[in-house]
Image (cartoon, rainbow over all chains, first blue to last red; front, side, top):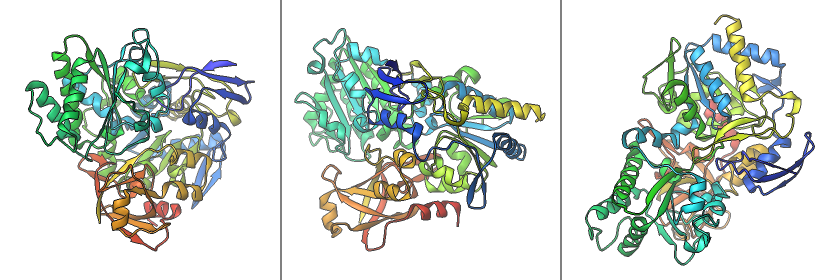
Length: 434
Length: 124
């Protein structure tokens, strides 16, 4: 048996024991339900193993040469291509995709821009304190889950951070306080102990809560006696006491915050709140971790920053990035594209129907390894190997630490990796002189 | 009845898992489902195996309704799915997957089929 890193989610657990002969995986030890599903994808019944083209309502198999020709044909007929996805692709594939977008003067964006990428944009103005899992394991005494439900989204996160014993936290769980702020009593509430604080906030009132906490930080006894956002005054004072007294605290920001924030006001308030606490704290500090789900949700912005100096959506014109202030939402919503290249994601299912309908009206090239809502409507499907199992690659863990993913076995039908396939497309386009 | 919609990820109601290992029927069984507080369920006169129609200006879906003590009164929770995304919305440049106002009523109509959603998106 050998130890491998799991690419089932953004936690990238590096302690998964696997027995494999290079052809099949015989045994997986240590993976959570999501990790196990990732390894089961190898032989999933809906796995796509050959390129397909849509003829009418039906998808028909075609050869790889024909498929690449069709990709080139769609791109050559396009003057405004859109590339989207990449949170389930390696950094190498993301880099190659940016190269492709540059060469065809396209717009490229990742799933992160409608998720944790928002925080990076705002952090440009405020700055923010990051931390790593290692630091959390070894030092943290306060964990706040805000709009986050790791028990169901990143199942081993609490095993690693809350229940672990670290270098400076040898007594482990007993001296760690867990605070959960969520309108829904999620599965994560089940791990709470007597010292922990459960705050079931009224839906949509997080901003009132954060403003009350900020005010209390600056002026004691400013919390109204009836409480704020459905939370008692005493509970609010208790949580603030923990935050101000922590030696090393971390806030995990979940989808409840990242996906409900009007004009990013809430994220701004949270970043400001952390700045205030850290300026007043004498012995410790608070940090932030964004809980993106896909295994390389954090990677695209690192790659984009290193290649172009920018994060978020990139619009290329004459092979240079222009400041178009566009996002994937505005591009699709304003019909500002004439074909799409989707990699490793399912926007037809994941975006509101207003956007998915508009996306479906233009040719879709899908690079993915399984049937999805997007595959149901794609004009062309090019399957690839599963990164971290059938090909290697680099990914950024949720705490922004780069982790190398190894290849365990060969892909079926010699499927290329996302990176190899995107490279083939770039080379074919160059060959044609476009 | 007006409720606040929140879409959430639930490990037993996982769209990616159903797309990878299931079929249209298992997608419908696991994802065309909504959770609401028993108090709201009572106000809607929900019976066992009843369906509810959830609608707003974005569209409408019919899903199974399940009573859930953990869902706050006044809220309705749907797993992240193609069903939920027929009623999530866009305002200006933002997508709203949470805190979306919806109207909910009981119905005897069958749940919205996966194929019907795909055809609607396609414009058929």
